[in-house]
Amino acid sequence: MKKILLIHTGGTFGMMPLHPSQALAPTDIADLILKYLPDIQTLAEIDFEISFNIDSSNIQIEHWQKLGRLIRQNYQKYDGFVIIHGTDAMVYTASALSFMLQGLDKPVILTGSQRPLALIRSDARSNLISSIELATHPIPEVGIFFGTTLYRGNRTIKISSTSYEAFASPNAAVLAQVGLDISLSKNILEAGNSLQYQDSFDHQVICFRFHPGLSPDYCQHFINSPIRGIVLEALGVGNLPINENSFIPWIESMTDAGKIVIITSQSPYGRVDLSLYECGHQIKDAGGIPASDMTTACSLIKLMFLLGKFPSDIKMVRKEFQTAIAGEMSIS
Ligand code: ASP
Image (cartoon, protein in one colour):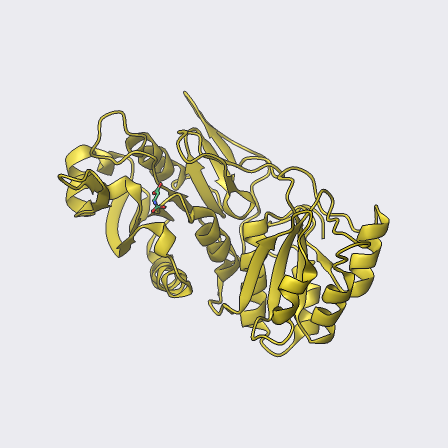
C-alpha cells in the first residue's frame, strides 16, 4: 500500500460554524477527518501533520517555507503528499511549491473545499478522497485537485468563490480527470532525478492592474522605493498606452533603476506577445519583460522566487524569468 503524508494548513475544509455568529473558524482537524472519513485509510497508509491552521488569506512566505521544509524532510518516507489548503490563496502556494520543489518524482497535491467537511452537502469529502487516490499515481507535479479535475498548480486560477468547480487552467491541459474512472493526461511532466529544494523568496514586489485613465504619475514613487520588481497586468497581448499617459518613460526609469517590470495579461486565455503591436514594441524596448502565457499569480511568485535565488544578479532574473522551469509556461 502507498504511503501518503496528509498535511493540513487550514481553509474552509476544516472549519466549523461559530455560534451564534455562524462565521467559520478553524477547529481540530484530525478528529474531524477521522469522524467524517473513518475509512480513508483504505486508500493508502496515511500519516497526518498539521503544518499550520489558518485562513489562506493569511498566508506568508514563512508558511511556504514551513510547508516546503516539511515535505523535504519527509520526502523519502512517502510516495505522495496531499495538502489541505484554503482555496483563496491556493494558486499562490501551489506556484511557490512548484518552484521550491523542482525535480519532483512524486505527487504533491493541494485541495480544499468550498463548504466545510462538517456540513452536509460538502465538497470536502470527495475532494480529499480523490486527492489521496491521485497521490498514489505517478504524477510528479505540484497539482491542485478540485471538483473533478487535477490541474497543474502553477497554471491554475481560482475562477469562482462559490462553485464546486472553483478552478481552471486556461492555458494548460489538465493533468487528470476524475469520474467513474481516473484518467491521467499525457501532459504530466516527466519525473525528475533528484529533488532540488530552494526556499528563498523576495517580498519586495508588487502587482497591479492597468486601467484606461491610469496616470503613470501614481507609479513614480516605485522608482526610488525598495520595490525590486513589478508585475503589471496589461491589456490583451500585453498592451499599455504609448500616447497620453504613456507608461514607456516609467518602464524605462524602472529598468534603469535595476528593477524588473513583468507584463502579464488581463485576458486569462492566450499569451503576452510584445511583437504584435507598436505599444508592445515600445514596452519591450523600454525593458518590459513578457510573461508569455503564465498566470499573473504565477508570474508574481516566479519573480519573488528568482529575486530570492539571484539576489544580486538582475540579468539572471530577467533571463530565467523567460525560461520555463517548472512547467509554468508553454513557450520559453
Ligand atoms: N477563506 C478560505 C481560505 O482560503 C476560503 C476557502 O478555504 O475556500 O482559507
